[in-house]
Length: 76
Image (cartoon, rainbow, N blue to C red; front, top):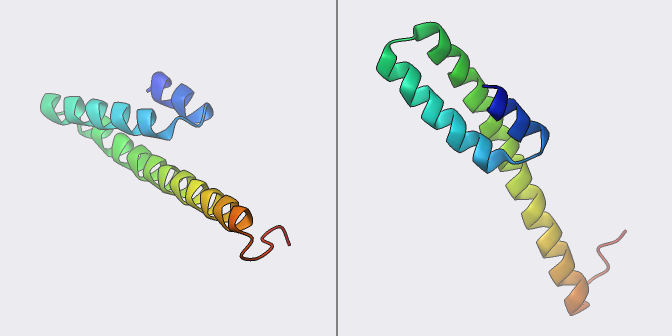
């Protein structure tokens, strides 16, 4: 779990999500219900952050494209 926290602090959401999924599967396989429940909550939060990062990247790319094409001034 500490590796997952470390990845989140570095804004490496994809790697954190993969690690969380692997750990979640291990906890489910071993029957650790407390760990499983905690990891489900963490996975939801990481998923939201990953989606937020993807949307921000899309918006930045679109803004750069629009500015490049001189369609409108997106800096205002």
